[in-house]
Image (cartoon, rainbow, N blue to C red; front, side, top):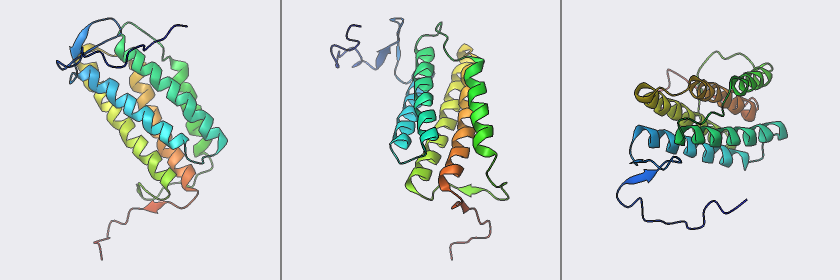
Length: 181
């Protein structure tokens, strides 16, 4: 395989545009680029989470998710390119059920935090929600494939459950009567 990036800077983006894989140039602040950038940010946070000491099954899943997110970025950069399929979503659902089955039921909201790895997972979850919102904005303008939207929706749920698993019973619950005293 040849080099994908032989030159890192091209100066072609100095005018505020960037190139899609098709060669089409679009504004860097377009809805498509916002979606691509936010999915990339999410992928970076998943990588940060995977760098923490997490259980091996979670680590392996996070790496699979990173590849899926890279594929979603590809779909966003090449509108006729299709990678994310219903099986990807079913895999997330199976993992959600698997990790959630032994967790105690929630009776109150959980505050993002706890350990560094749990907090990192919550940050990834919130970026995932933003990624989903960005993709919905793009979908309204350009009819994005539903599998991409479904994948991000399930992933945010899965990240919430993974954060609960990583907290290992040491979750911080919201106290609605807490007035700071």
